[in-house]
Every structure is written in structure tokens, then in C-alpha cells.
Amino acid sequence: MRARNFNVASPAIAGLAFLLACSTVPASAAPAASAADRCISPEVSDEARVAACSAVIADRKSPRGHLPVAYCNRGLALTELGQYDRVIADSNAALRLDAKLPCAYLNRGRAYFYKRDLDRAIADYMQTIKLDSGYHEAFANLGAAYHERREFGRAVAVYDIAIRIEPNVAMYYRDRANTLSYLRELPRAIDDLARAIDLEPGDAELHFRRGQLESELGYFDQSIAAFTKAIALTPDDLRFWHARSKAHERKGDAEQASADHDEALRREAQRFQRLIKSAGTPTPTP
Image (cartoon, rainbow, N blue to C red; front, side):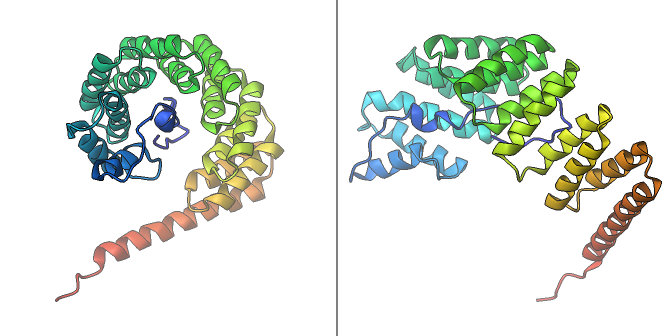
């Protein structure tokens, strides 16, 4: 799953958690087994997974029952690499071998989502849920698709289910908060962000977004504290300094507002100077 900027309305898409859950390829001492190991391992890169799963698929000695999972896991990696047409092809291949494989529908749904074919994405997510009602990733992704269709009430309802099934994924709270903010349910959105921060306290974007919503409600002390935490985590992100400056200004503290504004300008000037210096550095002659 790729990180996203909190200012982007589109929710994140869940996928990685199903890797081992639907992987049943056993390890052995045979040469093909090392490829099978890499195909299901959560520790390999996407490129390495594609290569390993491709080896399993190409190996005529691979048991037929292992092939759908290899297609599924290769499809997962290809999704992360942005090769969505190949994901759809792998999902279709997996489903020809096993028409009741939830991860193939989930993969294909994710690919359709990224291709902006929301109707097909929703159909695949719903089929995933029909086959496995405990698949929290499918509920979360269905919420993302409903959000994109601006069906915010539906999105919140399925995020609720995803969170009931798996309450320890920060992304689910983060995305539900995003949808709740569109519904103007800001106190509940702030509560969701607080829960996400409990799970991922080092995510500066979560603190920043919480500060924005608190500032909207006029909770300036709380929003300043949230922006301060974001700044401590990522001090070179000028958005955080400007946001805190604005919160100080709205609170009526002109001195602190000016100090934060000046610090943002100072850091911006420093960054510009670094870029100029980097661009002007002559290439060493061999």
C-alpha cells in the first residue's frame, strides 16, 4: 500500500494483509520451493515477488492447486507497481483455476479502482465479501470506492464494518475520518484521528489533519498542540508552520503567529538556497 497525502480526498487502498492469508504454497528443499517462498514472503520487494511468483507459474512441476495463489500474489505486487492491466489478467487467470478465490476478486477490484472503473471495483469487492465476510480489506476498499462516488454515508457504514473486524489498522480510522469530514461530522472525525494516532504516533500527517479539524471547530489550543507535534516529527514541512501560524492568528496571538510565519519563510529560503547550491555544483571531472 502506498502512502498518500492527507490533503488528497481519495482514500488509501488495503491489500497487503491478505498475502499470507491466502497463500498455501509450502516450502521445501527443491529449487522451485525457494521461488515459492519468495512468492509468499512479506519481506521481499514487489519486483522480487513478481519474479518469484512468475517462476512458480512457469514451473510445470508446480502443483495445480498452488497456481491460483501464485497469480494472486503476483497480482498484489503488480498492483503496487501500477501495472493494473496485468493485475486484471492475473486475477482472471486465478479465477479460471479457482472461481471462489477471494484475493483474486480483491486484487482485480483494486486494479479497477485505480483505473477509475468504480462500478467494477465495487462489484469485485462485494464478491470478495460474499466469499469471505471477514475480509476487512475488502470492506475498507469498498468504503474507498463509495467515497470516490461521493456516497459518504455508505462509505462510513462499510468502514465501520472493517474497523469492527480489525480495529488496529490506522489507515481505516484515517480514511473514515476523511469521509466523516465531508459529512461535517468533525468531532467524530477527530476521534478517529486520535485513534489512528494511537496506532501510528509517528505519522505527522495524522497530527496535521487533526490540527486542521480542531482549528475548524475553534479548538485553537488543541490544534496548536497537534501542529506542534507534526512540526516535531517533520520540521521541514512548511505546511505545518503555516497552519500553526494561522491557528495562533485566529487565537489572537499575533506574536506567535508572526514567529511561525517568519520561521516558515526562513526554512523556505534555506531550502531554495540548497537547491541553488545543488544545481550549481559542478560535476567532478574523472
